[in-house]
Amino acid sequence: MRNWQKIRENPSLKETFLVREQVIDGIRHFFKTHNFHEVDTPLLVKYPGTEPFLEVFETQLKTAEGQSQRGFLITSPEFALKKLLTAGLGNIFQICKAFRNNEGISSKHNPEFTMIEWYRVDADYNDIMRDCEQLLMSLNGGNKLTYQGREYDLTSPWPRISVAQAFQKYAQVDIDSLLSEEKLLAIGKQKGYQVDSQTTWEQIYNQIFANEIDPQLAKLNTPIIIYDYPVSQAALSRKKISDPRFAERFEFFIGGIELGNAFSELNDAQEQEARIDLDLQERKKLGKVDYGKDNDFILALKTGMPNSAGIAVGVDRLVMLIADVSDISQTIFFPATEIFGLDS
Amino acid sequence: MGSVKAGNISKNDYILFKDSPYLVTKTEFHAPGKGSAFMKCRLKSVVTSNTVEFTFKSNETVETADVESKELQFLYQDGENVVFMDPRTFDQAEVPMGLIEDKIGFLTPEMRCYVLFYQEKAIGIKLPTNVKLKVIEAQDAVAGNRVNAPKKPVIVETGMEIMAPLFVKTGDVLSISTETGEYLNRVN
Image (cartoon, rainbow over all chains, first blue to last red; front, side, top):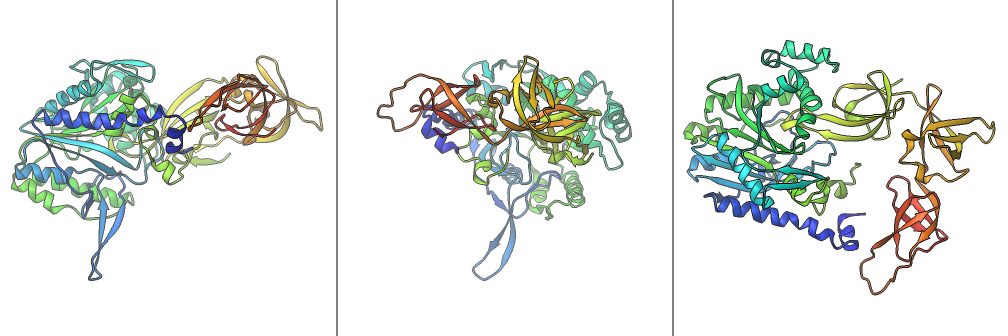
């Protein structure tokens, strides 16, 4: 039965779906009262983001004169927002749809989903951490969040753990082994994960994280902030001055659900361009849809993007928490699984 | 023994994990912070009935367990085991209750279904897509002027509770989906 039929049969379900409206109103209110402007940038672009593992939706832009160009749906409005930071807009946020193709079915994914991305100028990722703490308290209307039979305490400051600390504490992997491809693959094999000649450092890093670290973090009765990722896992963020093997990136989780991904933004044009080039090469190797780089974005960095920090948060997942539902399809009137008849 | 890419594992597959056979009870795509694809699986041991969770890389190969199926008849359950019989040979097979506790409510005496065997041990069953079950307890509900159609709980002959439309009465035979446990229609 489709969602619209379920709602008709059970009118109290309407309230669950309308939590989305409350959450989005709440997000807008929060940022507008914290000195941010809301902006609007395209969903249809010529050069989408370059993350090697994200796949894009592609279309054709046709003109009346019979010309045709490739166009893409954004995986995130990041490039455009950074151009606006360079233009001098100050603190900005955008609530918009983002699109990711070729992802599997999950209770937390929809190929078309709603994201809020916000940026602070003259700020770093620590400031964004505080925004997250305050935003969640504001949306929840208090510090006790009940989700799927468990109570979470949203009181700030939230616990924070670095990626290196998490690997040491929960997976018994020391920092040198973590950062060495050879050592981490060997440890992965010892731990019983499948490791062959094709296995990459990134795969074992994430597989250890998923099997040994995530389950421990999911047991916490507070949100958790994981920060300082190895630099290869943070293409758009600044390296830590005190330890350039790591980048100023953080993610935050509640009840095992990843809600946001944040950076102290990299504004060095040369370094950013080098990382983008590497990403595009990686995309080619992985057989992902091929496209060029956004030179306008590089130009904005060269022109001088202010020191900023920013984050992208999944709005549908926030709605899941506030509405206390276990599946993203319970927050979206017409999920892709219904529209496209995908197996779940 | 075959193999499959972890990204293609489905619910109800039987796989070998750490050299032991498991039933896949749940799969979920997992993509850590824009990283490569993984498949998070919930697995139920066919040997111990214990559940574990494991996240595979989507592109790693996983061995499938060679499972055979035989069409048998449900006889009875005796607490720990559910007993089936081959109506032609009268051979019996016992499936541990712990492996099919979510399916037992659909089984009526002499009902045929496929019993699954791994290395000669009965480890599970495959039900038909829907089954007919008689209602043994249904409260009267006033239909009234309702635009929307809520449901009421009824008990069927196996002891299972189903949500059914208000017009359903004791004695009605209902067609129930074995996939979702939902009422499909009345088949009196």
